[in-house]
Length: 289
Image (cartoon, rainbow, N blue to C red):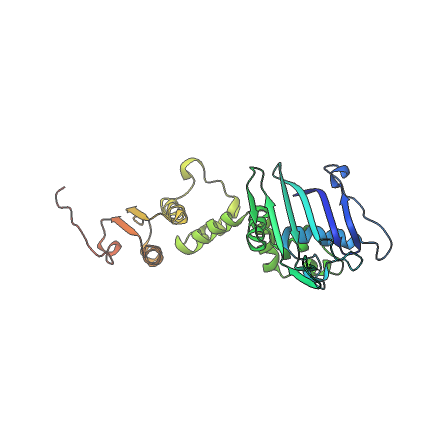
């Protein structure tokens, strides 16, 4: 995600409408934002984070605190962000809940928070919650992860440094879209009892298995094939001698997992051994076929 234009109105120390053309910075490199204390440097980060996720970048600031105390009562507070993601242009605009002068009579009325996301195909998503979900789905990280990796506010950098190993794993798995690989590993480990022979291999998960698994034994091939099938989660499962090349211990372990996976699915099992189909609801015997 590369921001190209940031527009702020009555936001933080910026009383009027302020436009920041980020496209002038180019498409690569590291850029320094400098200025005196209180000049509004952090506000730029707050504005970008607020436009995307509806909250500022730091933990101590809330959306209700974002309206400029220097702005006129009738000036609307909003942030508009244009950005490029995946080679396509997006625009998101948000305004927090705020008070404005009543159009009739005296006093103030409350204006509800608003949000709008314009997609490259022309569709427009409206409403804070809908925009929140769309942005998270588009960028594949939520606000907490964004502020730890993409835009780290003052005082928050330490959180990334002290994050636990599991937190970092989850964070980077979501950022780099490696979830499917984790699912494959889990399927091999849990549903096919294949993790042991993989980890015992000299190169572990980097082991080359050859065309059609040429370098795997018959039992190893079957475990991998079972894991691939279960990973797709099809409504109908067909096992044709699926555990025939396994020893009895591994067969029992895999069958125990298959019983759980097969719940709610139509499962057809072709086997020579009665132990393979002992849990079937109906058994058909082919005699002299």
